[in-house]
Length: 30
Image 1 (cartoon, helix red, strand yellow):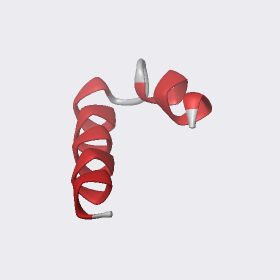
Image 2 (image 1 turned 90 degrees about the horizontal axis):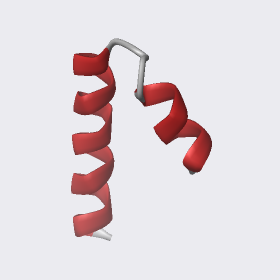
Image 3 (image 1 turned 180 degrees about the vertical axis):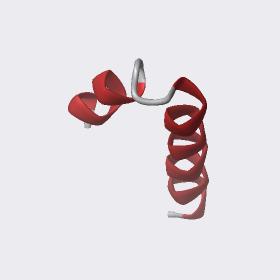
Image 4 (image 1 turned 30 degrees about the vertical axis):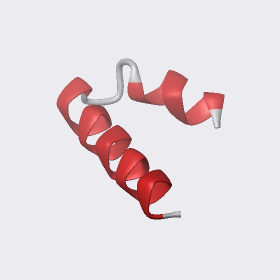
């Protein structure tokens, strides 16, 4: 689970950097 949690944190950081542009698509993917 640790690796998954790290991946989620990375995705959250990507969402912050993209400011919702690609983040929304990533969120819908999950």
